[in-house]
Length: 409
Image (cartoon, rainbow, N blue to C red; front, side):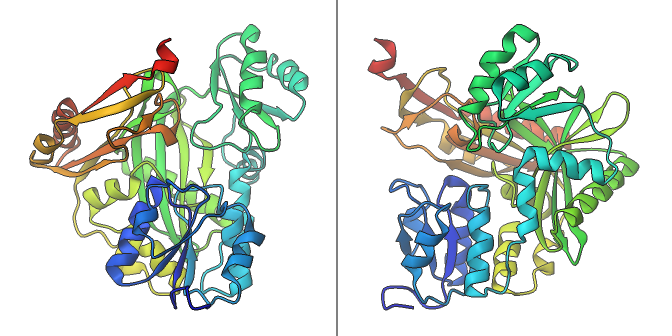
């Protein structure tokens, strides 16, 4: 490495609030980090040893800046944008772990639909096109309600629930505005119990599997709360078998992935989407609170070519619940102050309270995952106990936000 690069560094692709645990764990382990993020105000940057203000999508620019560096490893957390660079840079620098190119198909929702079908998993009807008129025409023949989304989107951006054909054109236009390729996907809405499945693979088998219930904000698609799910063992084993099959189809023999599924009213499991990476929205904290596992430490160990089994071995059996905090407003505003945080932290069973916004920051309506401004995690011996602790903490923690003058004028 050139003299201003730390030797044996871990290259971390992205510095959003989702990546903060990666930097903290690397610092705890004494591993220097190089952060790659085009934003100068990315919240994890103060935790990095060195910073590259480059888009995580721009593989060539990152490589040019790193030059003849010899990083100890490359890692990415809950960021779809950086996955292609993770693969390409791993190959370029010969790191111990190279993100599999085949796993990039998970970010293409059309390609993933085809993968689930090839794995024999129960599906549902959908259509997709880069021609908006074609999407509207084909979607009109599906069973309503529908979900309209960008085929290459993430974080619930550009997603609309449509209940009648007349609402299709604006929904398609909205989805296209969030798609790099301009491809829009229309899917039949699957009725049932939403279940999110986190897994961490080793040698083609799921070393860790956690199933979560999710609640969405304002009846939409943005996750507001999640909690470890109570399920019959047969259902849990079935979900584990499905995600193992999908991970192998995506070429993920080692490493994390997560899946959004629905346990339908007909008893069938349908897989809605996949993220071939670590889960976001505070999921590592949820897993740590419930089981004592450390998926962040396991991911860093994987990136460095070290054994990671011990970090995924449960040390307790509890239940946990998590709430994502968003702005109380439906318009942009300025965070004035936080109330009740110190009191909430003193509640027994509250394991984490993380705040992503400070007084004076611009905050946006919580209509996509990236607009959250904090989170609370609670744990207990039962789902009911964890939920009640979370309710108590949530009732105390309150962001005071004032609408900006530009919006209210």
